[in-house]
Image (tube, rainbow, N blue to C red; front, side, top):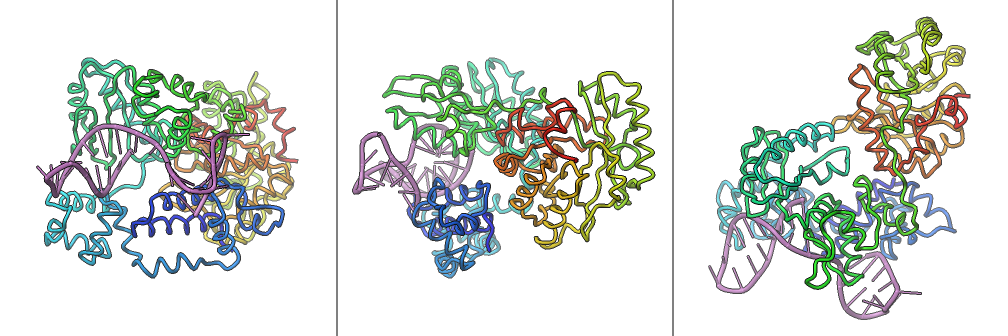
Length: 573
DNA sequence: GCCGTTTTCGGCCCGACTGTTTTCAGTCG
């Protein structure tokens, strides 16, 4: 039975193949929209298909045709149309579409005219100068393709938001010092707080564009200038990241900020809406005919379209327009709402700071409580705690709590879920803890049924409070384990347990989409730093960004509440 | 291929930059 992700993947493949064949671009878009709609769904398509009272067509972007294709995929496990398309175009050809500078038209020409079916073929043809002889191609194009191929070979994956943030701050500093700069902002997926960032986008209003562009050109990390026009400039940094700079007039700054913040899908909806209202929206403003109606601020732009201002994190064309229509745009969680941190380590296991240092640092950050959750014994590499050592630490915590005023340290443990199922510490030990996070660290490659059963088993243990990093993914490094999240959500709801949004920028687990799905199931989320040092306590902000992207409010998050209220929400029994 | 209080047919977002062009197509965001 295919998962939603597999069905989305099938639709994306169809879109690629159709695009390559030069199909109607709107038809291609319909498949891409369908793929997106499916991947954002919080319940499995199979369960909708199985329910005679439900219709796939109630999903926005799914019509008669895609509904039938989903049903075919769910019931037979394959899709004749996709198989047929795959037979018409060699699979490796699709890689051509991923080369910078190559779109469907040029890729198709290379395939048809030169018989190129792989990146290796393409490189060879460029080196033999066969490409520049094609109509519509030239010497420059050939060079661009070779550069694109070289980049694809060495390119880093998308940059972690936290790492991009360092570059953004440095570039803002650099540009700020150019003469004549008035307003300056970073836009793009960075501003939307996406877990990873592709390009960096900067907007500036300035009396004169030249000095600003010169400043960017001389930024230390720049390796090549990709393009430089009157108002737009693109450079590549040595780490491979592309940086785009736009110089815009002050009366258009808000429109440009809106436009370049995106997302693309959010903007498509906006411009369609403008059209419906007899207006036109572009990066210069909202226009009625030739007349500029709005553009100086983002608020003006949205107001002109009869919409509220959307926090950038929500601008993904997921739920925000529905919420706005219903007048139910959520008031998103803020970092200052969080009063506790319920997952961290000390030198008792693999942390770098002592219990005392973590307590002091947490108090200095203004927190009201923390849970100290060192590893359990299965994690031998981290010197995990057995029952005796856990109790020793908890006794020490008791002594701290006797001294502390207005601050509480909870006796916690990050207890491993063993490979064969069951918890790493006995129930009588776990029963003495205030807070137990259960984690999978071993046996991550087990099949879906087994790993899901282990996690559900932990949720059914009365002493467990929450599941930590529920999918185990490490962004750009390790795939999530093959866990049936829908089943985990159902069990967490039934057992009144919490799920973690781990704020470590490599984890961000649950991710934004899964977090929104968990919320839809009515499961309270706990955002935790999983700190292994004092400095790590500041990573909470990365978790908050993802929670905001998931549409979470203060009320949806466990550790916005005083500890006494947390227990009434669920968790440990 | 989707969608609809203007529509069941005819729309479907918009502009900058580049290169190969002699007026524009392709790509990108």
